[in-house]
Amino acid sequence: RFWPEFKGRDGCRTPMVWEAAAKNGGFSAAKPWLPVPGKHLSLAVNVQQGDASSLLEHYRRFLAFRRQHPALAKGDIDFIASDGDTVAFTRREGNERIVCAFNLGSKPA
Image (cartoon, rainbow, N blue to C red; front, side):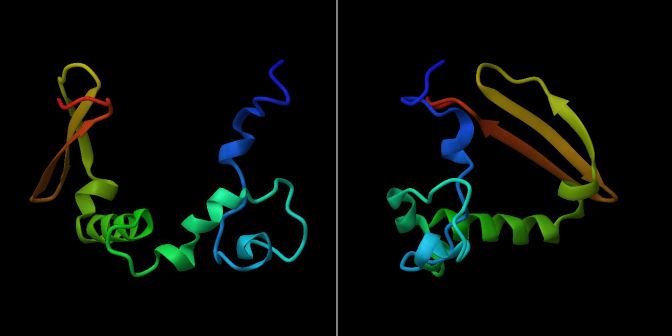
């Protein structure tokens, strides 16, 4: 219905960009199903790697934190009542208890 101005979810399903200077962002030497948008090249793994403020390094830190806390991966979950665009819950495993609270909105909560 909206083609070609809006191409559905394809814009967020483009190939993973590994190297900014490589053909197809380092995803493949073959032609990928979807093209690699030029604006994605600045977000390549090799560009973000080692930059403590990058999204890549943020995810790496969080994954390391998650591995250190079994409650986050395997624990029981209890949701906590929260207002607006927030979600909160407690994860428990053995003697570990972690409270997680997230603001999914655009304003402080």
